[in-house]
Structure formats: structure tokens, C-alpha cells
Length: 215
Length: 231
Image (cartoon, rainbow over all chains, first blue to last red; front, side):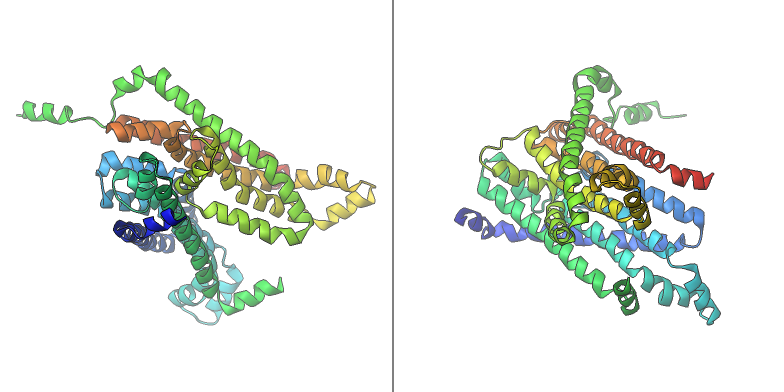
């Protein structure tokens, strides 16, 4: 136990933790910046939404190690290659959930809003997005947890992160280094899961919460 | 005039895919990797089902145990795979190889499979169960002949998600000598030989997509009522 704690005190531990977080946060933000507008653009066409959801589904089937490993011959070694790969991995869940979330807003509600004289952009910002918000956040949460997990694999293409510790522990047969890396990654993923779960609830409109309770 | 020397240079760039290597090593490297991957995935889903079905049925019956079950399996699900592999092989008595990989893959499938089993059983209309009771079926008969068959499409939907997830994560298991397509990827990284990386990555992706489509077919087949409605 003391040996594991000693690893956390190592000067490079914070550096690896920082790499891991930066890699995950930037990839997630870029993925949101790509997936959200695309889902918004295709929301009103049946074909567009179907294409977005299908691309998302195929994208979700691609193994994370496959994308990261493919980045190596195509983009080389290091932070940028890992960032591109992690972004590609983070896009599908956000794309799928935003598309389905917007699509599942009941037509009666939109008709009612239109009848009340709301413009199309008002319908989007005041009706569709708030109602779809929990589903969209669930997608972002899935992506975030997955990105934190996949960032562990960035070590294989020389992009650092906490995966470095696991690999170092395995190669030098240092179980304390291995466990220190594994526990910190696991903790980071669980914190991400719980934190985004909280965000999801915080962004659920009050009216929807009441409706959920009634059911 | 085309600069022939330049063209030749471009063509002789270290190619991304060395087709000769693929042909020569097809039976030695690629086929065993595919077989190993199918083995890991099938065993893991099968073991996970044996655990998840009874736990799911019990959770649907006795609601109190459902939240703790989803909490524990949810934590397992969110542990990054490389970390879980690392923790497993640190346990005394667990050596590197397929065993810890299968344990981890089973752990990852539990949440999805249990959740879908419960959702499937919840979706059975209470009228149907009442009708079965009225016909004199016992509790066990209702479960086996009415509830489970009706819940099956949703359970298969869970198997589908779990299988696709497992095929992906199994590639990482090669790092602790679990075998499978990940072995091609890691060998390729170590030897700096893109052909192996691409072969492993593309085959793993293909396998995930094929499994997804196959199980989608099974799911549709098990929902004859949905097909009838569409027709």
C-alpha cells in the first residue's frame, strides 16, 4: 500500500495525470463541437437523421484500440494523433443521442409552440433543446467516460497519460506502479461517470422531472 | 513529360499495406488471430449470460436488489479495460493469458445484459400474465413459456450491444497475452509494421459490425409481431 502511495508522490505522476485530463477534455470538447452542429443541421430531414444515426452506430462498433492504432501509421506518434483518434471515438454517442433526442420531441408539443407564435429558432432553443437535454447529456456522458478510458490507450502511440504507468508497471514488473496507474484511471473514470450523471440531472428541465416522477 | 524517377519514388514509398505479407502469413498469423478473437468473445458472452439471466430475473422479481446490482455492475462497467486487466493480473494466482481477459469481458457485459433482461421482463404486458394465470399456468411455467419468450427480443438487443462492446475490448486483452486480433495490432506497433496494425484493426472492426448485423437479424426474427404489423 505504501509503495502504491509512493508512486502518487512521483514527480511525473501529476504530469501524466495532466496529460490524461487534457487529452480527454480537448477530445470531448472537439467532439461536441462537431457532433452537436451536425445533429442540429440534419434534425429536420428524415434521411439526414437516419444517415447520422447509422454513421454513429457503425462508428460505435469500431474498437477504440483499432482507431488509436490506425492513427499511428496515418498520423504518426504523439499527442495530435491520439487527439484525432479520441475525438473520432467520442463523436458517435453524442451524434446518436442528439439526433434521437431531438427526434423524440413530440410533434404535438412543437405544433403547440408554433401555434403560440414561436419562431423556428425559438422552438429549437426553448422547446426542442430543453426537452432533448437529458438525452443529449446522456450521450455526452457516455462519450466522456469512454474518452477517459480510451485515453489510457494513448500510451501505445506515445501520447502519454496514465496508461504510461500501467505499461511501465507491466514491463518492469512493478506491481505497485501498475496498480497506482490502474486505480487512478479507474477513479478518474468513475468520477467522470458520477459527475456527468449529476450534470445530466442538473440540465433536466423542472417540468420534465415532475413528469418523470408522475410516471 | 512525366518525371519517371519521381513517380517511381512515390510508388516505392513504404507502403501502408504490404499485400505480400498478408498473403504469406494468412494461415499462420491472421486466421488464428480471428479464431482466438471469436473464442474470447463467444466464451465471454456465454459466461456473462449464465450469470446475468438469473440475476436479471431475480432483480425483476425482487425490486430491492436491482439498484445495488446496477450500482456494482455500473462501477465495473466504467473501469477502463486496460486498468481492469492490470488489476486482475495483480491478483495472486491470476497469470497473464486468456483467463483474466475473459473475466474482464464478462464483468463488462453484466450491466448491459442484466439491464436488458429486467427491461424485457418489465415490458411484458400484465394482462398477458393475468391471462396465463387464468389458464392455470404455474409461476415457473409463466416465466419460461410467457415472460421469457416475450422478453427475448430485448434480451437479444442487450446481447448485441454486449457482443459489439466485447469484440472491441478483447483487442486490448492481447496486451496481457489474451490473444486474438489485438495481438496483430500490438505486434504491428512493436515492429513498426503498419500492415499488421491495419489488418488487426480492420478485421476487429469488421467482426464487430458483422456481429452487430447478425444479432440485429436475430432480434428482428424474434419479434414476429413487429414484422406482421409492418407488412
